[in-house]
Image 1 (cartoon, rainbow, N blue to C red):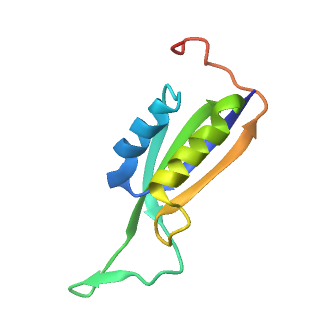
Image 2 (cartoon, one colour; image 1 turned 60 degrees about the vertical axis):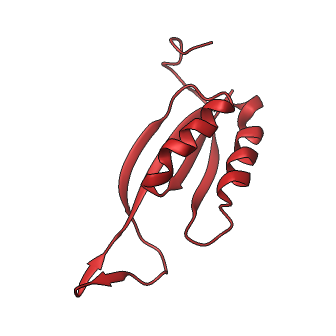
Image 3 (cartoon, rainbow, N blue to C red; image 1 turned 30 degrees about the horizontal axis):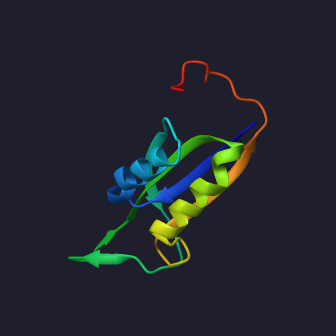
Length: 103
């Protein structure tokens, strides 16, 4: 069984996150870019609101490896600090298309 790991993080930290995930046994990810909303006040420059940019990194992880990966990412990025990001996992009950992954 697999888990789906969702990591919302600043775009400049994505490469670092992917390196850590690969060291924990990840073999690929999907990365989506977007804007985040939070209860932190927006920053302004010349009276123009600057929106918070965010990347969503989605990884399919074997259930046996998920806790080690979460722990490694938490220790490195410390998601408990405000504005760092968000990490969550969900069970993947049915996954197709992983037959061509690396061993």
